[in-house]
Image (cartoon, rainbow, N blue to C red):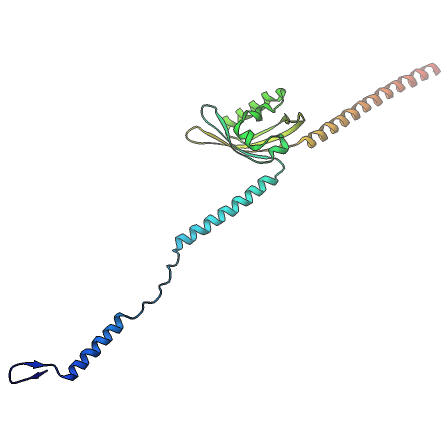
Amino acid sequence: LLNRRNGEYRLTSNHRHDFQNSSTSQDRHTSSPSRDIAPPTPQPIEAEYSQTTSDLKQLQTQLQGLADNLPGVIYHSIVTPDGKEDFSYISPGCRDLYGLEPEAMMQNPQLMWDAVLPEDLEALRASIEQSRSTLQPWRWQGRIYTSQGTVKWIQGIARPELHPDGTLYWDGLLLDISDLKQAEIELKNEHISAQVQAEQALQNSEALLRLVTDKMRDLV
């Protein structure tokens, strides 16, 4: 600034140049383009949740594949304190064992009871009641009718779990043991046949002994 005699102040050219440079620099600063901002990386908990969900889906697929190929029936049933029974899951193996669709048996659990031969029902009920009262594993062998009228021997195995509200959960497995039972019957028949033959041979020996004894007496 220059101080003139009349008391006025005037801006010199050097100061105007500095002011212009300062303004130009400020404009360049404020008008500079902004840089792109990268999206935030997933938080560790989100990545962990995603991985857990993927692992669960893979496990479910593996378990379903195992259930589909198991030679038998896997089931999960629920019995309420008032005695109502429902199936929350029945594997596709029921098509081969019972000749029925899983959905049909889940909608009507009575179908499984109706398939049991009448003469085997009492033993079935007794075995279930014993397992329910003791909470010990359930085991039973009995015969069923398939939807085509064929008789099959099955082996039932289940584990009961009693919840605080009185609801009983069963995780069970049903297997076709018809071939095993047939082999047992044949073996039993063979044993009986062998026993009969042995008894017959003994009787023949005793008869022969009596004959020889009688002849010896005649000689004497």
